[in-house]
Length: 193
Ligand code: 5GP
Image 1 (cartoon, protein in one colour):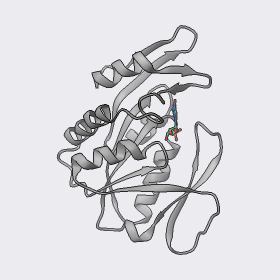
Image 2: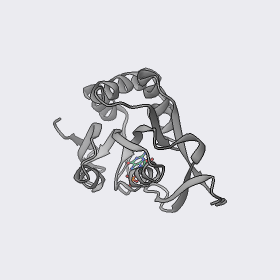
Image 3: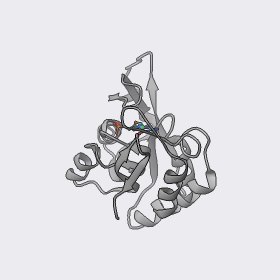
Image 4: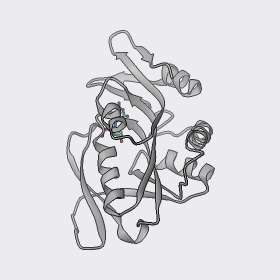
């Protein structure tokens, strides 16, 4: 998506440890007009899928998931990062290794809000090694629901997550795929799509 690529080039900051900072428009200050364009693009890419729920993970996936949900006319469920683990029978739970915080979270969704009747589009801001997505896929499957697809704003194509997920056969669409980024020169190269 050219609009997103141009914005990453203009405002993205390359940080230590393969981290691309886009907190001035994506995951801290949020450019809602841009989110609307991204939501419409997800709608176009998954137009043929019977999606009735969007699933994301707190916190930075929630903004884009909500705007996308308006385009799909469906509700958003966000997986909560649980500190105190109450693994009673009321939640589906999994573990996710955080790329940016280098720690493992327990992630939960209530059994009340997802079940076998659900056809789920998973949305997140970034895809790096794929741990967050694999956790979310696990939660959907534990609920007996169907993963209809995955929509990502920015995929870092030089990390393994995209390949791992595509190899499972799930339709994964990333609006911008960074092929290469060089913190010393500031160069960012996107994959042609
Ligand atoms: P993964 O689980 O795929 O390794 O990482 C995905 C999660 O880590 C995303 O939910 C996102 O919040 C965070 N993340 C991964 N790479 C980056 C990055 O380069 N920049 C930012 N801002 N977040 C990232």
